[in-house]
Length: 442
Ligand code: G6P
Image (cartoon, rainbow, N blue to C red):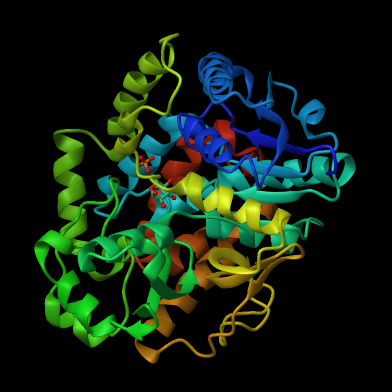
């Protein structure tokens, strides 16, 4: 890396890319990037060109010598990369809309990373990420894989257990979002807030929270019970929590916990949205059209504020801070998805967990948590079982394993409903599920 860093971003045509570019520009002094390769597939070529040209304008405006390369040739891009970031969506937003709409027909939550939708996003994504890992082994064996592709927990799990790539970190903006909102709620600077995060991706809890070293968990739980402070993200309806439930829970839930603790209300909200404004994917499609129109403007050379309509706020901070800390061996604490290695008791050692880690040049070192509090342990274990079985189904293409994953997901009411949803979704997504072709006729 002596002559500067080479970064490869797979899914480079994503509307989030300007976030990432802004993050790299801000940190250039510490993180001297020589080449940024944005990679996409032919269906994403137009978006890649638009967003890549904006990236070039942003870098030119900042006066930095970062070369931006746009390509559809992943292997060419990967050669000698130092960091590979992944942010692709197999089947694009149309596939996400199916993940959201089909379960609703059976009165089951339809969501990008939870329930049947999360399972199918995993089934589509895992074979692709494992292919990328094979290319990396050959072309850039020393590189770090920094994955933001959802379902990030399941994807990290699959890489850890089914590939030879060990230098992998899964990233999410949920923890950083919680920290920022706690800071706002208490009117303190985010740097003063420290949260003890532990759990899984989109299933993470703040077990304690301190401001300047002093625990403020009780105060935060009281504040979170107020409708104006219900912690959520742009993509999750901010239905309010029962204040007494939060006090009983004794830990900060993340926005996604609403799907588990408020299943009925969330389902009603989803059904209403599907019939009116459209599902989240359908809303995001409209936001994307607006964003790409803006990105085309040759006078635009910054990340436009409209990008904040997406759920991924702060994700570039999470990604760039991580890369920066690995590169510079900063040994600061960041919540990431990594191999458990015993940090959380009652989760297998070889599984991915989302937990605070010390970030070193050898990667994240998870901070030991011990047992999770009994009131959250069961749900975390159940989701981990789901993720493990789902990853196995994605790798093997085995119908029974996929049905098992669907049925043990807590959002699915029975094996019969699971089978109905599974069959309809296998058919709807068959184009992107080659591993199931012996099951589904193509
Ligand atoms: C949150 C999640 C991300 C997810 C995003 C969806 O930020 O943490 O994992 O990708 O929301 O946002 P969108 O705008 O696509 O609905």
